Image (cartoon, rainbow, N blue to C red; front, side, top):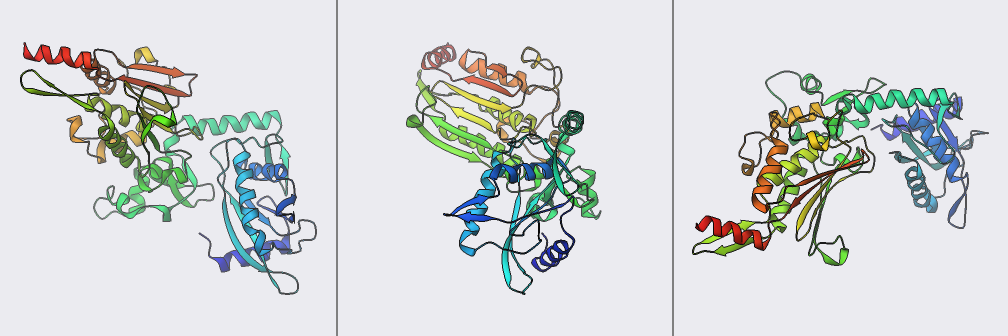
Amino acid sequence: MIKTIELVRELVYQIRLGEDTGYEFKALVIEGGKVKSPQRDSIADEVAAFANGSGGILVLGINDKTRAVEGIAQEHLDTVEQWLTNLAQAIKPPVLIETRLVEIPDLQGNLKPVIWVKIPRSLFVHLSPNGYFHRSGSTKREMSPELLARLFQQRSMVRFIRFDEQAVPNAHLEVIDPALKARFLRGDLPERMQLKKLYLMSENEEQQPCLTVTGVLLLTARPADFLSSAYVQCVAYNGTERNAEYQLDAQDCEGSVDSQIQHAFNFVKRNMKTEAVKRPGRIDIPQYDLGAVYEAIVNAVAHRDYALYGSRIRLHLFSDRLELSTPGGLPNTLTVDSMDANSITRNETLVNLLSRYFPADPVSKRQNMIERRGEGVPTILNASERLSTRSPLYEQTENTELKLTIYAASRAVNGLIAQFNDE
C-alpha cells in the first residue's frame, strides 16, 4: 500500500499536471445529506471505464475544470464512501475498489479532505449504467462493437485458459498469510522463486508482484476479498423445504480453500442424523456416506468456476437429502451422463497443488485431498446408492451451475439394511 506522504506528494504533482489516462478528478455537491452532483451513473461509467482498461485513480473533492482542491466536508465523508460502494455494486459485474481518505493543501495551504479511489484492471468486462466504456486519454468513451468484441475475447481467454494462473491485480504479496505460505516452501531457494514456480504468484501489467487466482485461494485468509463469493454457504433445514422458518444451522465457510472444505464437511457431520437399529445388536446407520460427502465437497471447491462473479457454492441439508450447488457448468465436452467415466479438470493448477500438498480427511481413506485417477464421481454415486438405495442426481443449469443431490437413508431403508446384516 502506498504510504500517505507518498500519496499526497503524487496527488499534488498530478493536480498540477491535470487529468490523463490514469487519473480522473471530480468535485462534489452535497445537499440534504445526499450527493447531488455528479450523477451516480456518470461516476459508475468512469469506474467501469478504468476497470475495462488498465485501471486508474479517481479523486473526489477536486474540480476537474479548474483543478482546485475543494475537498469534502468531514461530516459527509461516510456518506460519500457509501455512495461509492453502491455505485460500484451497480456495475455488472461489480467492480472491486480501494478507497483512501487523505488531506491535501489547497492554493492557500489549507488542508482539505479528499477521497482517493483506486480501480484496478479487471479480469472481467464491465457493463455500467450507460453502456460499455473504456478510458481514452483523459476521458471515458463508449466502446465500439469491434473494440468490445476484442476485449471480450481477450478477457474470456484469460477466464477459460488457465484462469487459476492469472494474476489478481489487487492481491499484493502483503496479504499472504505466513502460516499458509509455509506449507509450500522447501529448502533454501528464494521464496518468490518457489511461489512463482508453483504459479501462486505472478506480475500484473505494471510488473508488480501479486498473487494468482490459485495464490489467493491457497495463501489468503479471506479469498472472497479478492474473488467474489469464494466461500461455501452451508444451511441445515428441519424439513424438506428451503424455508428460513425451518432453519436449524447455518455457516459461511471461509478461509483458504482447504479450510473451506474441512469446515463444510464438519458442518455436514454436525447436522446429519445417525439412526440406531437393534437386531439384536446395535447398528448405527448414518444418513449419508461420509466418504462420498467429503469427495463431493472437495470436487465442488476444486472444480468450481471462480470466474463467475457473485456465485458461491451452496451446501443445503434437508431431512431427506443433501444439495450441493457449484458455480459453473461442466468444462469442455464433459456431460452429466459422462461424468462417471471421464475426468476433466477446470482449475488444473489448484487441483495439482491440492493433490500434492494437502492431506485428506481420514474418512476418505486416501493420503491426499484430491486423487487424480478419476475415481471421485464413481465413489460419490456408488457409496451413496449403497446406503440409500437411490442413485445421487447431477443436474446442470444453463452452463452456470451444477447441482448434486444425495438422498438420505430413510427409516425403511435402515430397516432393510439391518435385516440384511442380521441374515
